[in-house]
Image 1: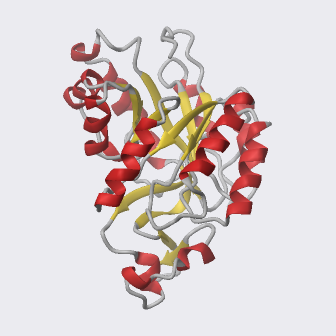
Image 2: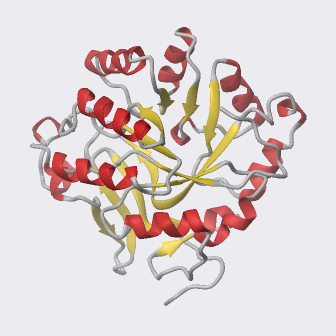
Length: 301
């Protein structure tokens, strides 16, 4: 990775792993489009549920090769919850491929990659909130840090200015989740299966029927959460499109989470730095030290 001075850092666009369960054909078409997009970094892999096997490991590797040949930097993302011996074997397979960097979304994954002397991307689910934890993960191999989604710009700036990080500040890359439904929590239970009165062990992969997750509303009918298998997401979309100027000199990459609705148009806008009023279902509160469901700046009601 290339170290950048704080004066010249302009955020580049990364595309996170697909968080939903899509059919194989839809996944293939999506990554073919990304090959011709302005995205700099593309993350591939299943991070939510190991039962989702529309895309095999061989499919991901083949796609990674295609995207790399198209000039993209590719990172392979691992599961957020490792729950079985099969998950551990999948992790070993992920690290043994030896060509692409891995995103660790679990502390156990981070330590396993460290034991193999492999640098890695530290995913937001690692929940690093202070300079000591960031420094510790750097010492075991983290070279890019995806900031927890609820942290504000002020918090990030203050954290990175701590003396403990002086020696690594110019080498550590910073990535911020900037578009999509925020991944908030994970559970041993499958909420999508439960919403269909199914047990997790007999889910019948029903989440493939919900390509954008399953919306849960409040008693007042307001969007509250999106159920996505074992993952709970924000009901509103997070959108930091208007906040890109505030990231210069602080953030290296802005992550856009894949969505089947107008995603390529949104990617182009981010890459071009185009500002746009927030829609009624979009929020950016966390970045501004506000409640997450708040909007800061111009919006369209």
